[in-house]
Length: 290
Length: 323
Image 1 (cartoon, each protein chain N blue to C red):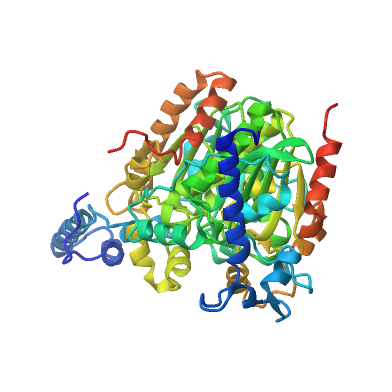
Image 2: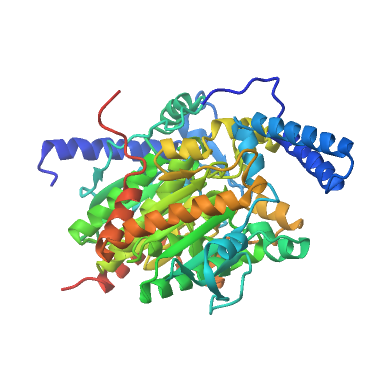
């Protein structure tokens, strides 16, 4: 594939995006040289330098998994030189003429360097051809509007068409408010596509990362054959604040975390970021038909 | 839709004025004295006038009407539109959730499966039904009933009136998200006709979980939205008190949803809302359901599935014809 000059260029751009995501985690001012910037772990308060972060795949010593961008995620997961983006042309649309939405989209694009809250690709993992989509909370909290729903659906349909396993890394605050009912309809659209894929006998693996909530949890994120989660990821339908308001009491420590969801029967395995690729290769091997 | 004059009172005010008038009309009862007769006539004229002021509800008015406690609920619709209703309870996995009301009934001498969200009429019922917000058990019961409908080739008719799925602790522990997701996925592939009727509030995934239908009917004052206006304002502006503002930008009225091709049909309500004349609503709905069942029953299982999937597949695709 890499003999094709266009593909090579695409690959370079992809890797540049991933590099930018790897380094964009710190919120410190640009005046400070990049190697001296640090990021505070929200779990243990430890200050991590960029080198430390990169060496540990953006996981703190205490085990806290920082949310990461979709290109970086795909780079970590897939075989180098095989990644090819799909559905890139699918763009968000202002269905409701919602005040301020186009400007907000522009700001999000600038801030994150992405065009939407999910990137979908085809490529290989451990030599196995797959379709993978990774959501990105740095773009509008990874919220699902029409473009996110459409990219995910196209990824599912490509997997169905190619008969390749599908892997979806979920990370989302839920449905995107600014696209209103059209966002809600994406739940039905993606779920229907997942059901068709399943009935064709094709494997789907869902990886729940921090946070996966709302409309994404109530659609494709809960419809995989195999469900994995990153440690400590918040996974739920209603947000903790809403639940606390409803029941009028504080929620216990660890409520809706990956470990809680596993205990309640919704997650097969909790897999640290360092072992994710290895685990996915194992699953693909167990489903290979040779 | 013409914006209503700012001097017109809100339907909330008109509604209570009409209620007060009804009370006075009732107090007079059978008029005895000529004075009573005159007064009664005057009252009735005034009432009529007030009703006519309700002719152009704003989105905020419609949200008020959609939530009106006197509005018919699923139990009323089942009682008035169907015969021989046999209620089915429980999800066979964990529990019975009364906020989903469902079973088998006759419609025009044909058996159908009816499922709807229930808010309850008394406080006790309200509490048991979480004010119409189902738990995962409820959605799983609905799914069980739908699969049975498919097995026995019965059309499915759902009645949706919910602020959303119940956001409680136990509901989360039991997989609220998974329960809704499964419904969306499996409803899309059912080989029988599905008609969804949105009668009041249609909030979020909790409403969609009964809404993956071939044909979606909305009552004129029903609403359907990604979240309640309060929740929307709270997420977007961190201020639930701005819900009135949310109502006007959310595009949640039946007409908005018809324009966005989410609703396929709007059923007119009497002036002042469905609670002013429920019989008129039952009559109009009966006709709408009958007509659509007739059309959908001609389609094969494959066609029903393909059309339903195609309908939902099309949401969110930007028309390439740039305007």
